[in-house]
Image (cartoon, rainbow over all chains, first blue to last red; front, side, top):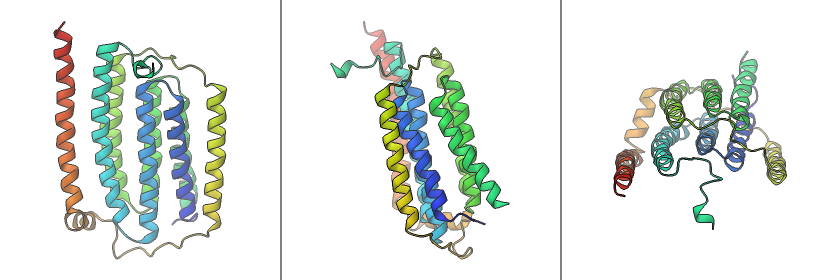
Length: 102
Length: 168
């Protein structure tokens, strides 16, 4: 059923996490940064499910439920913040939201 | 056959994730996030966790990506606002990628972990429910409370800014 073993899944998880991480660092659109944060959360769930399957326990799967809940709540709050920010500043580009920088 | 499916789902998830980062248009990025999620759900099915794959698609594809698309179209940001990546960013990405590959390679040198036999504590709905309501009862309560706080926070956030807009 799993010809590649655990390492292949861990590699995919690491790749997804790295792609999400560099997306957060490189992109300037706040919404895309949020999508990349979601990618990082999904990468961690892949690793959890793979470890859970290869250990024969359910704990990793249960934690995936928690991660999904946290991710949903995070997206709701984050998008509310983005909408409020857009109403106030008329932009969501992180380049122009640098009031705290100076 | 599982061999081929693994390659397909891995390609979908990683390729979709890459296109999320590299795409200029936010709507396209959300669509490629959906593709990536489909790949990850397929990987979950290969790992005998069909229930988790279903929940992932339900929560992410059904709620999160729809919410993203809704906000993107509500805010109507101009596409193509992304500036080209700077040389420093590309250098940092290269160094990070090489470090990641080295780390994964050292992990692979440890030897493969044997697959636990299926059955026993199989990932069925009943087993998950038993775990959630016995061992993980306190985290479930805390997560429920956190959802309530998040809901209140969203309401306050969208209310407060309306008031400050009216004030001046």
